[in-house]
Image (tube, rainbow, N blue to C red; front, side, top):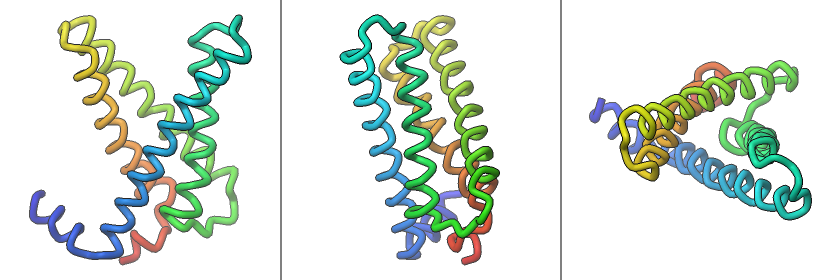
Length: 144
């Protein structure tokens, strides 16, 4: 596995692809956090869980368009179908991330920050796998 990773990262185009994916991930995270804070400021009576869900949905929509145009350079004509796959994949990883967080903090009593970082890392990898091999499977990075 390490050999394959070294080979992937030695290819400049693939390395740039991974960097783009990480940048989009960081931007998406910022969008989610800022969106949550704005919702809480401007609609303070809204339940925090609903505010969180709304901010996540908005971040997923933004992430789709950034991934589609910049990271995977998708040419898929049926954007609704593609977005449906993207959104579905993100929901799956959200459930996995929440389960890992719940088990790690509640059942195993691990530090919540360590569990949050670990569950986020798992979600990041899963989201990439879903995006590359299921949503944007016809992208130029897969044809290389």
